[in-house]
Image (cartoon, rainbow, N blue to C red; front, side):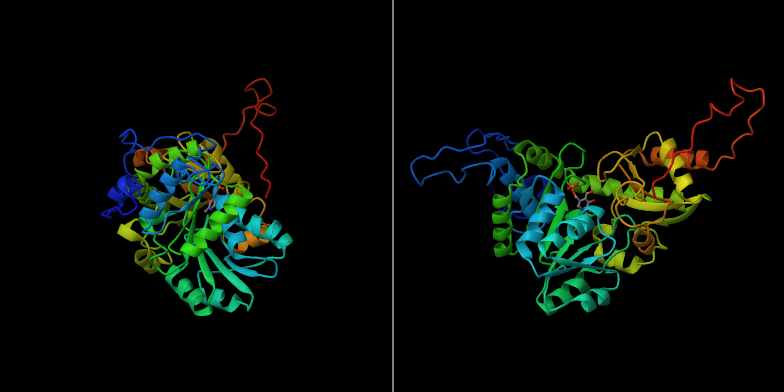
Amino acid sequence: MCSDYTIAGASTTAIHGGLSPDPQTGALVQPLVQSTTFVNEAVGVSKGYAYSRVSNPTVSALEAQLGALEGALPAVCFGTGLAAETALFLSLLKAGDHVVLGDAIYGGTVRLVEQVLSGLGIQGAFVDSSDPENVRKALRPNTKLIFIESPANPTMKLTDVEAVAKIGKAAGVKVAVDNTFLTPVIQRPLDLGVDVCVYSTTKHIEGHSTAVGGSVVSRDAELLERVRFIRKCTGGIQAAFQAWLTVRGVKTLPLRLKQHSANALAVAKALRANPHVARVNYPGLDDFPQRELAERQHLGGLHGGLLSFEVVGGADAAVKVLNSAKLCSLVEHLGSVETLLTHPVTMTHADVPREHRLKVGITDGLIRVSVGIEDAPDIIADLEHAIALAHEVPAKPKASAGCCGGGACAKPEVEVAV
Ligand code: PLP
């Protein structure tokens, strides 16, 4: 791999960084190496690969590409984002250790900490990291890691990454950022002083909903060696085909994120103007509460494809909107070329207790939108139509209409498990 590629702009780096034509065949695109094992030329002599649980040439191509994209060492790639997080936690934490986390992070991370790591004697403390002082106050002598996500999922609340990195450095505690939402194209936590980034590459990085994966990216060789060792021991490496698809996805990442961001801003403005929408959370809006931080922390005037909004009418109205949208799909996913809708209280955050959800702003009527790269007017038209249907005053059933006068034939209300 040509890891010494001179970095130019983000698109040039995404297409060429860390990658070079196959030296054996001249293939411009990195080959897919599906082999589980690799032949030794003699005892103790190999071409650097032994067995695909430990490393694989196609996975290495993705690792070099992701490292180059972030001005870092080659990444360590995993079968999923949560496998990457698990390996990172196991690399840095042991029984008796303490980790401070942002309180509005991905629900799967909360579940991992509260229901798996706690059983191994690792304690997690969740704090509102939008005020970095809360992170500093939560540190204990046994704190070994600070783990934050910015923007938070799904409220879009930001954390000042540079300020938290300084707190970690001063205390000798490693700082990790889940940078899945913005990717290194829009936010570069390593440049802001953090030690390590973690990604669900399943999202924007692959970008087409065809490959699950995760990565750990850092400039700290010792930390990465430990993560690689944990991966070998626990077997979480990404499959070659998923890595190959992800290499292809990364090449258009900067291009896609520009379009995701432009579309998200247009959608956010349209939703803000809608009388049936109580609140829109998008860092690109001029009335976003942390606007100054968004402008300072996000690159290129871009703020990504994720936003959330509160529909008037609570859970019932939100469910109607979600059931009425046609172009936008209702899924537990984000960061793909298609526009994707999620109802956090019944989907991604269903496991999070309601009081905790309400405390961090995840209300029953909140809808998360991962704005795709379709034409913005089409996305807006679909959402506006769905919102209008949710607020339509139902026509009074006529006594003589239909087989049962509109009673038994009427569509049942959907129950919401909040
Ligand atoms: N981090 C964030 C911000 C996510 O949204 C997700 C998944 O939705 C993950 C991590 C976990 O990634 P994966 O689903 O690839 O395990």
